[in-house]
Length: 146
Image (cartoon, rainbow, N blue to C red; front, side):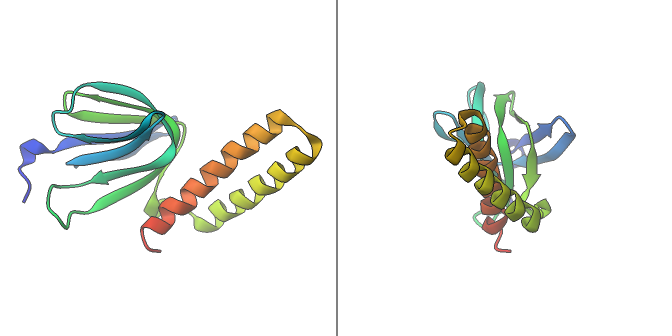
């Protein structure tokens, strides 16, 4: 069993409230400048995140449970052995409605095609973001082997 002093709190918060709060040994995130793995006693950090998957390893054991969370960007702050992720939206893999995610992907692809045909840059950018969000949710859902 992992030494409890080597675990730290990981919270994921959205405008709708707390989505996730557990202790973990490692949290993997994708910042705008690349991948980051944060462990106990990591230097203080505040960095923006991209649309991606967050992985939280719950203990230091080899067969430890890993929680997968889809986020739509945001920030991570790590200080005093607390990792706080503030995201526009976030969903744990087990809570993702795959049919809704696939429908969102199809809608985004349709809007993307229409925006390209009309040369509408603003709609194109928004559709690209919506597509990345939907694809991230699908990817995180599939990571859990559903």
